[in-house]
Amino acid sequence: MIEESDEEAYPQLVKKLQEINEWIDKESPFKPIKEISLPDRTHLQILMR
Amino acid sequence: MSISNRKKYIAAAFGLGILFFLGNLFWIIKDRTPLLYDSYWNFLFSMKLFQGIKSGNLSEIHRIISYYRIPFLIPLITAPFYFISGINQDMAVIAGSTLTIGILIFSLFKLGEEISGYRAGFWSVFVFLMYPLVFTQQRTFMMDLPLTAFISLSIYLLIKSAEVHNASSPAETSLSPDFTPGAVQPRSGDFSKLRFSLLFAVVFILGLLIKINFILFVVPPLLWMGIKRWKEWKLRNKLILLILLLAGIFFFIFFFISTEESGKAWMSFIKGGMLGKEYWIYLVKNTFLMVSEGTSFFFALVFLIAFLFYRRIPLKHRDILALWFLPSLFILTLFRVDRRIFLPLLPVLALVSGAGIANLKNAKLRGFVLSLIILVGSIQYFAISFGIDFLPLSVTVNEYPVEKSEKMPFTHGLLHLTLFTQIVNIPPNPFQFSHPSPYDWKGQEIFELIKNQGKENSKVVILSKRKELWMLVHYYSSRQDFPLEIWSLDGSPLLYEIKGWEKNGEQEISLRENFLPLFENADFIIREISQEEKVEKFPNQYARDGNSTRDRRKPEE
Image (cartoon, rainbow over all chains, first blue to last red; front, side):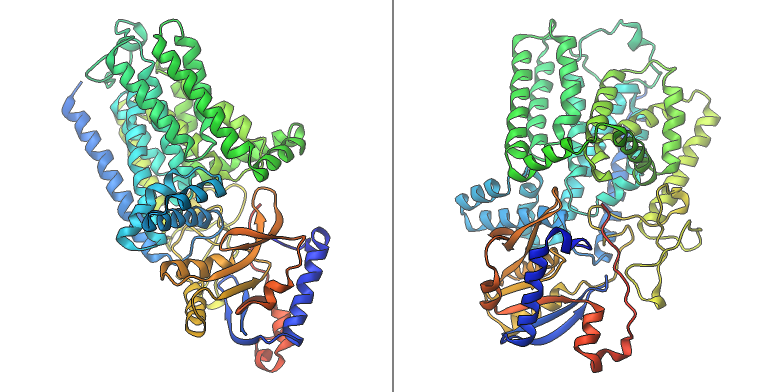
C-alpha cells in the first residue's frame, strides 16, 4: 500500500519504520534465521528472538 | 415449436456447464497463486464464519458480520464446504464458481428464451461463458461473478412476475418461430405470478447480501416495472415492491454509507470532480476495458453486429435490458473502479448477441456465424486460460514473475485484440494471471519455519510495505489449525491510505499510537529488504547477485 510517494504521504510512518529497521539491526535481540525471495522479487528476511 | 429441440439445447447448456466446471477444476489444480488482496479478504471472511460455525459460537459469527460490515452470502455458502476439505482456498473458489455458473446458465438461458426463444437462450449462455472476464473470474474468490448471477436471476424473475397475459398481442405472435414462452402463460393476479414475485423478492434480498452494487443494476428495471404495471398489480405486489425498495435502502445504508471507510470513499469520489471532462474520459476508458478484457474484441464485434440487427427484429423486454445496462454504467463511471465491477453488464451484451445470432434467417449464414463463434470462442478460451504456443502475441513484456531462462509471454496494452492476446490479469490481484502459475509464493515455507521454531500464538510482526504479505502465512496457520498472532500494516483499499496495524486482519493499533512495543514484544519479525539493502548489509553473501535491481510489477490502479 505504501509506494513511491510514501515519504510525502506518510513521512512520520516512514521515519518510524526506518528507526525500527535500525533498532532491529543494532540493538534488538532478533537474529536472522532465513531469507526468502518471492516470485515477484520481494526479498524477505525472517528474524527470531 | 419442437419440444425435443428445446430439450437438446437445455442439455447442451448443461453440458457446457460441466465442461466449464472441469476446465476450472483443472486450472485451479495447476495454479499455485495464493488468494491475495480482496480475494483473500473474502476468503478470510468465509474462514472466520466456518470457524464460528464449527465451534458453535453464534456470538462470534455475529461479531464477524458486524465487524467486517460487508455482504456475507457467498462466504457463508462456501464455509460448510470446509467440513469436507478443511480450510482450503481451492475449495472456496471451486464451490463459489460452480454455484455461480449453475445460476448463470439457468438465468441466461431463461432470459434469452423470454427475449427471443430457446435458441437465443443457449447462444446467450455460450457467448457469455466465452467472455475472458467471465471465465477468468471463475478462478478467484471475488463476488462480482456471483453478483452477476443473482442479478441475471432476479431480472428473469422480475420479468416473469410482471408478465401480463396478452397472447394475442402482435408483438408476441410475431416473434421468431423459436419463441417458446413456456407451458403456462401467467395472467395478472395468477398464482404463478405471485410465486415469481415472491421468488424475486427472495433473490433480491440474497443479491443485496452478495454485494451492495446489486441495487444499481436491479432497482432501475424494478422501478420501471412498478411504474408500468402499477395499475394492474394487486395490492400484495405493490407491497412487495415497496418492501424491497425499503430493504435496498436499509442494506445500502448498513453496508455502504454507514461504514466509515465506505462513507468517506463515497464522499471523496463525488468531491473528486468526476463530473466534468474526466467523467467522459473514464466512460470511454471503461468502454475500451469492457471490450479488451471484458468481452474480447471478437465478441464485441459479434455484439455490435447483433445490436444493429437486433434493432430491426421484434424482441421483448428491450426496456428492461436498457435499464439494467445504462444507469449502472453511467453511475459506476463516477467511481474509478476496476473493470470487474462492470461484470454485471456483460449478460446484457451476451443476450443481445445471442438473440441476434439466433434470429439470423439465412440458414447458411447462421451456420457459418455459429461455427465461427464456436471456433474463435474455443481458441480464445484455451489461449487465455492455458496459452497456445503457435499463436502470435501482440506485445511481449516479460517483466513478471519469471527468470530469463523461463520466460513466458505476457501481453500488455489498452486494447487487446484478444485473438492475439494470450494472457490477461485476474483483477484485483496484480500477481494472478490467466495462465496457471507454477510459482511458489512461499507461504507454507515461512509458516513451517515459524511453526518449527516457535509455538502456538507466537507473535509475528511483518515490517514491509507490502501489506498483503501476512495473508500468505495466515492461510497456512488457519489451515493447519496452528494459530499465530500476525501483525501487519493495514490500509484502506477504497481510500488508498494506511490506517494502522492489524492483527490477523482486524485493526487494533492506530498509526497515532507508539508501535515500537509491537516489535519489542514480537517472537518473529518478517521484514522486506530491497536488493540494494541486501547487498549493502550482506556484501559477501550477495556479491554474486550484482547490483542490478528490477522493480516488481506494480499493482494496477
